[in-house]
Length: 117
Image (tube, rainbow, N blue to C red; front, side, top):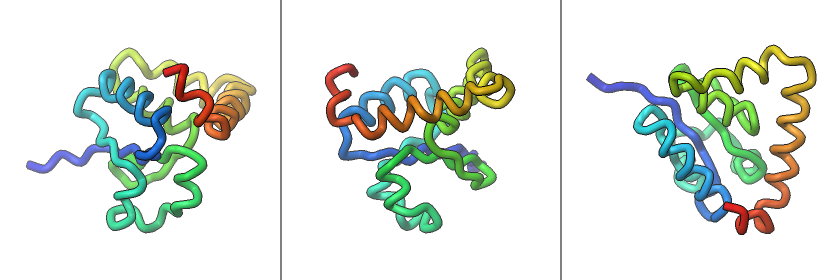
C-alpha cells in the first residue's frame, strides 16, 4: 500500500533552509517528504519557481498548497503534541500576521541568517 505523505518544497541551495529542514526532519520523522524546489518541477508544475524562491511550500496529501509560516505550522501539526502553533495561527487575532511578517523578514535575510543555524 502506498502512503501519501505531505511534501515540503524548500530551497536546496540555501544553507539556512537546509539547516531548518534537518530540524524539521528530526521532528516529523517519515511523516513529511522534503524536496528541494529545484527538483520539484515535474511533480508540482503548478507551483511557480519565483514563489519557491521567496518561501517554502507545503503540499498536503490532498494537494492543497500552503506557504511561509503557515506551511511550517502545518508541518509541525503532523506531529502529535505539536498542533498548538497551527491552532494559534488560525485562532489568535494578529498571530498569523506577525508570524508571516517574521517569516518574510527571515526569508529576505536568509543569506545572513545562515550563521544562526
